[in-house]
Image (tube, rainbow over all chains, first blue to last red; front, side, top):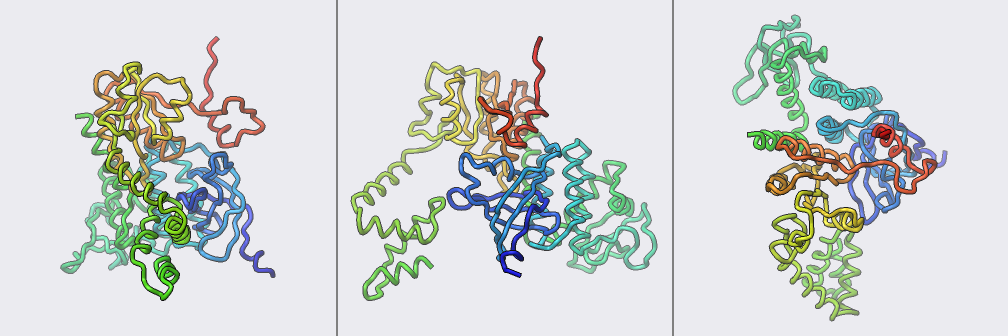
Length: 249
Length: 213
C-alpha cells in the first residue's frame, strides 16, 4: 500500500481541545478524535481573516476532521462542522476548559480511547445542558484515570478486600487504593471517608461535604499522576472566585 | 542553529560575529519570525539598508520609552490619558470593553458608538494560565465603577475565551448594579442563509429574538 494511504485519515469525528497560533496565518490544533485519540495538526491559513475554519476549529462542538502525515504533527486537510450540540456557556465554559486541559495533559498522543471520547461527549452535553457541574467533572475524572490504566479502587479495602465502610476513615494510597493504616513517615496519602469513595464509584454525591471531599481527593490523585505539571485552569477558577468574593464585600 | 549558520557565513575566515548573532537572536522576538527569516532580515539590513536599520533602531527605542497604557482605558498612548478618553464629546455613561486596540479601532470605524472604551489587552485563557490577575480585571472594575458609567457593553471576541471573559466581567459588574449588555451575534449584514456557516446559523437560531407587534 502506498505510504500516503496509510497516513491519511478521513472524516474522523473529533473535538478540538485547543488551538495555538502558528506562524503568521496558521494554527496548531490539538484535537481529540473518537477513533484515533489525541492528535496534533497544523491548520494552514486558519488565521486568515476570511478563513472558513474560524467557526469550525472551536472547542466544545463536534467536528469532522481529515488529516494526513506520518510524524507527530499532522496536516489538516479538511474540517467540517457537525454540530447538533448546544455549547456550554457561563461558568460551564470554565468546566469545559478544565476537561480539555485534563485530556491535553494526561492523554498520550495517538492512543485510541473511544470509551473516553464517549465520556467526554457526555460530560460536555451535561455541562451545556445545565447539569450540576461538580458530579459531571468527578465522573469524567474517574473515567479518565480508568482509561489511562490508573483505575481507582473505590469499592474495597485494599489490604483486606472487605467492602468499604461508609463511616470509616481511610488513607488513599495512590497506587493501591483505600487503606486503614496510616502511611509511613514522609509519605502523604489523602484522608477520605468511605462514603466519599463509594459516591465516586457511583458518580452520585448526596451532600455538600461528600462533594467537597471528593473534589479534594480527585485533585490530589490527578496531581499525583501529573507529577510536577500543574492544571492552569484551576488557578484561573480560584482567582475568579477570589475576585467575586472581594467585589461582593 | 541560526547562530551557527550566521557564524559560518558571517566571517570569510570563519570568524565568529557576536553582534550579527545577537541581532538575529533579537529579531526572533517578532511573531512569526523563525531562525531563517531572522537571519535574512539581519543580513538584508546590514548589507543593503544601514540607514533603514538605524531608523528602525531609533524608532523602537523611542516607542518603547514613550508608549504606555492609558490610565483610563488601558489602550496605548503617549500621554497619561489617551485622546479618546480626554475628548469631551464622548458619552461617559457608556463603556465598551474590547480585547485589543485593533478591536477598539474596528468599533470606532462603525461610527455607531459614541461612548468610551476599556481595552483588556487580552482575554481569560484558562488553558494558557491567563486569569483575572494576568489581565488585571480589578482595573476594569475600578474604571467601570467610577460613578459616571451606566451601561457596560461587552465586545470581547466570540471565541470561547472571549465568551468566558464576557461572562465573568458581566457577572462582576451586574452584581454592582451596572447595566451590562453583550454584543449581538448572528447572520452578517447582507448575509444569505445559503452561504452562512452552520455554526453561526445554529447560534442565530438559538438566540433568535421575538418581533414586536
